[in-house]
Length: 104
Length: 190
Image (cartoon, rainbow over all chains, first blue to last red; front, top):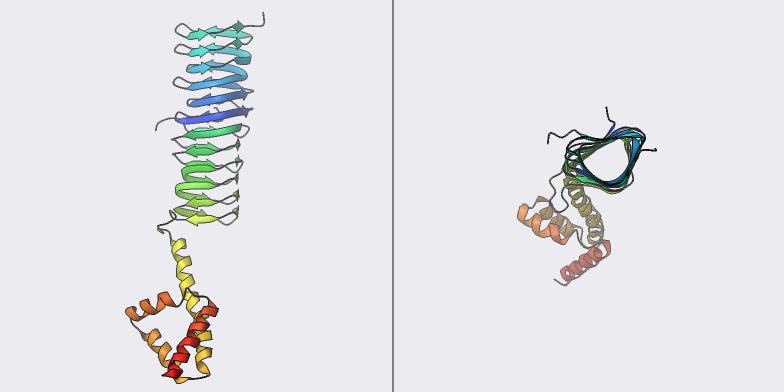
């Protein structure tokens, strides 16, 4: 259960900092810093640098991504930016343009 | 809208602006403005450092900024508001703290009860202020005539009250005295 939800129809312009899970179904512009999981749902638009424990993307994301654990780009995701995480998966059908850094 | 409700969680801090057309529940910090078309709830742990705009606002937490509700604002127990509060209906519950200007109604039109009560109180209070000095002024030269004059005004129907009412309240005490003297002087001449 996510404790912070940016629902569809909501736009946040600025910086979001949290220790909780975050679900984005709306729009975020700026910066998103979380310690737990971040979910960018299908239909969501994020134009921000995102950091978190783990990141699941099914929507549109433009910005650099850093995760402590993993980043999963699901089918239908559209990501432009660099991704840095220990584990990165890109599902078939996900669009992606950027560098991947998996701490090799 | 069937979207999941938007929540700014307890440990979440948003620095910036939140806009949208749906409901919003603030349990954490928002350093900035909130302007949504839906209802906004500022939880007991919620803190907002900026103006809040929404259809209906319910505040149990802290707000430093102006509140503007299109329909209603409810400041509940535990609410701390520093800023102006404007909505057609405003409810401030016991335990809520407010420092700022509170206005019910839509400004010009006065659909709310409280905004009617204030203008009603002022005209009621104003005539006595004007009347006593006039009565004193009249009392010395001619006790009987002012009594007759004030009596018709008091007993008068709507026409007399309407004509006399608008003239009396606007001038403050001193001009009222001057007018009374002038009237007396004319009476003396007659």
